[in-house]
Image (cartoon, rainbow, N blue to C red; front, side, top):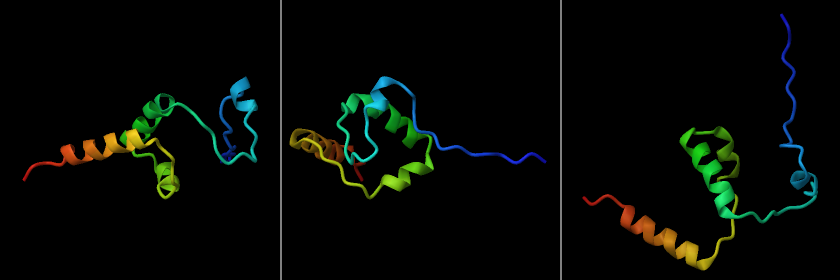
Length: 78
């Protein structure tokens, strides 16, 4: 029986990724770039999301207020 060999995926090998240094702790990206990917990961119940559920993110105050309003009005009425 042939044994499977796993490899670590480092992402696409284009110029954008090669400029990112591994010692860097943060990356700034537009939300529109990651929303579709995160939404798909949540819908697909990807287990890797749990690895990051305790990580803190920084968002603008106006986005936070919109999220709070959405959360309030999204609640099902009893």
